[in-house]
Image 1: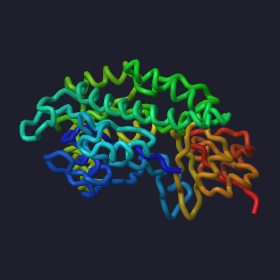
Image 2: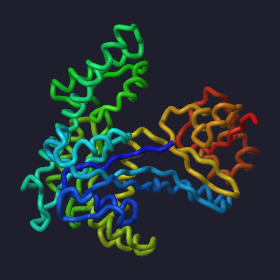
Image 3: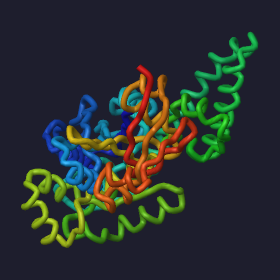
Length: 365
């Protein structure tokens, strides 16, 4: 199960620099001019989780495979993107394929780096992007409503439901609010997700600050945090320049560099964790002598669906799950001691997997 987060923002805010650091590659060309990213770059990064190393050490696992999150570097959007300005249409389509949006905002002063609007104002930048995405959604909805009318006359129930949701979204957008503000019932959620509206996606604001403000942020990032809190979104402070430096260091040098900068952990680790939280994801583990592996699932996932992340047959032919809580596995020293202490449980199809569960699935042949 893959989860994609699209990195968006105006040109020259540090998106590609951030992406380079995330993927530890120079795949995205970072340059001081608009539209240097002509094709969306995609990179999968490890989700930091110290629990996996602990489990692997206890089990003597030969291989450690962390959970992964995919980031897509999308070219700089500008005012008018919804009408095709600055290659807008192509990149709006790329955003539509993502599960969440990491909105990079320029929160640093640097006369050597040109701002497309000639000023540093992250709140205004956020509004430009949000407006373009809202306009694109409105145009998309109007086209879809026109196409649905014939199916509705034919009595197609799915089309009737889509029409209802789209009209609700359009009314919200016309009221100046993004589609994520639309109230959707649990029964409607699946159909709502299928609409893939740009402004329905959860947003994480990434405040790109100067190196000296990487630990505590600055006045610009403070304003963004207030805006995010008011909108029910999340925000994280990061210095893309620092992260790019860190990405070139080995583990020992990395730790020393972070200490010198007064940082408890790399900003990218915080960014990935924030993305995980934004998408309401959690981790379960499979552990053995061959490998210790982390698997990503949405919070609230049932045992059969969690098994299906490994292989579709595991879900279709699910019998039961043997589960040990992470804390028990560590405290008792592994699978066998946990089993002997009565801490291994057999769970059926109705079991909802908890974060940190160490699982073994039994399934039919």
